[in-house]
Image (cartoon, rainbow, N blue to C red):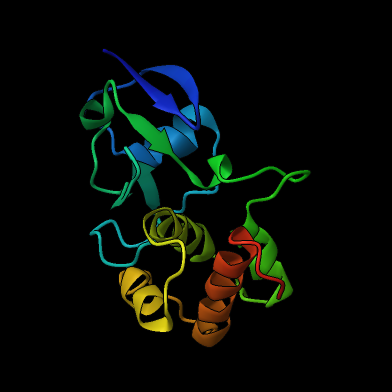
Length: 157
C-alpha cells in the first residue's frame, strides 16, 4: 500500500505496510537517520517528530496514521548552511555529549518555541520532560533552548 504525506515541506510516497512505525519508514524507507530508535514504547523521546506541528513519538505511530498529514523530522529544522537557531544554540552551549537524544529534544524544543516564543525555564523543562538524556547535559540543554528563544526574538546572547 502506498502512503502519501508531507515530510519536511515536500510530498513523499512510500510503498510500505501501513502498520510500519514511522521511525522505521523515515530511517529505512527514506534514509533519514536523524530520528532515533530508542525504547519503542514512547518513553524516551529519541524518536520525536512533529505531526501537524505537534511533537509525537514516531516509534508507535504507524505510517497509515500520517497519510495526508505534515511530518517534520529533525532534518527539516535547518540545513548546514542555514541552521535552525536551536541547532546553533546547542552548539554554542555545548548542549550535547553522545547526541543520541538530541534529535528528539530539538524537535520537542522547536514545537515549544513555535507555541511559546519566550518560554521561561519551567516551560522548557516541562516541554522536554518526555525526552531522556543520560549524559547529564540537562542544564546546558535548557540554556540552549532559552538562548535560541532569545535569538529568535532578536535579543543578543
